[in-house]
Length: 616
Image (cartoon, rainbow, N blue to C red; front, side):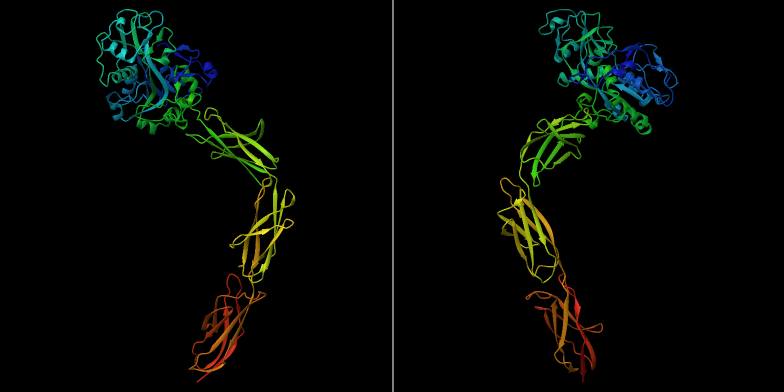
């Protein structure tokens, strides 16, 4: 059987950017004439049969994919021609399967042939094939139009879908029956042989045009070999549905305007093979060779467009059972992107350029180039859709910036640019905070010095110490001070100074740390009567003094009186003092101590022991 197949030399020279019209590939590259696979298929090879429509595409793919392989090769057998039988993987010869239906029939049921691994199909799975658990992987997009002789035809230039229904149901039997026709002749309607995917697809479209009612073919409708020009090229009255992709390689026919459909081309598999034969997935799956950039020119050379992968918003290589209507091609697969830019300036003459690059399908990969006028000021790789550039020591005055996204892979993402974003850079200001470490209970001071463009600033400065309310203090010679309360809690206390800036000078905010240490304490214990009877309760006074504390600052917390490890009284400090009634004690002499545990501001301490005698 003679067919056309792309040569390896031509395959290497094809480019990715072939023009597309209505999802269909542009002019086909040079091809040569060859026949079925040149090798004898064997166990381990991947054998395909079926559709005439896509056979050239699969053979082109096989020619390149099989280079350097001795097993796991693609062996795609033509649908028609001689010999009438073919031998698969060295088995018994079978009748050459002619058409999508004939190929798929060998994947299930009584005709199941385990030497067949996939079937080429130009139509989607029917209910019986779905029930047989077959799955299909779309890989290309094709069109369907009506074809006539390119040299002499009585058909008008346009035949609509409605006209096609009336031609094939016999309503129109002469060309002069068609509205607007200026010629006559008995129409010879041709239709692909039974089992053809093109035939089933065409009949489905006639049914849809006919209001959902199947069209009964007129007796004048004659079967013809799918996509063969033999019955068309020399007959001015012949007309047949024809693949727009295949038409590109058939100069003896031409396609009419009017009726026009688009469809996916598939490769069909048993579901069990998809899980047990990983080579099938590696060839036909989403990440397989058929959907790769290397296969794109091979598919286009057969007249079709490669579908985009799911990662690019298409369905190439997706194993499905439903009709595929997503015809996004790899030529259209570059995702649109949007780039936005927010420019801001900060004290220190810093400019931050924050770009965001988004796409509806995938996260963009590439660089963002930042420019000011014609000058590039930097570039940053996009990470998580963001790219941020910080410029230091920008000149004072107005600046206008722009961000442009440059994708790493132009076939995956499209370039985009932001609108202009403008900022005005002001003079710098600075704040210096002076703090002095202290201990709890002592008053302190925080001093702030503010400069504007290197000179002493004027106006006021806001100073906030810890959780206290911020205080606004007038600057004198660029300096201001605030007192630190003697009751300020111990710890590392944040001090925040803020200068609001002017129309020409940036504002400043600086944070420093004021360290206030815990203070030491001294505990004294006095028992009012150190000689009491067993029937009496002793009275004790405890005082806690904070070392170095200013007047009015007192220790807080609890006091415990102990004799050894036994607690004989407790109390709570009020203004650093606690009066405690002791428990009744048995006859004896006791050494009583006051113990203060301290708190977050002061350390604890113990008193000296006081002797208490208890008699009957």
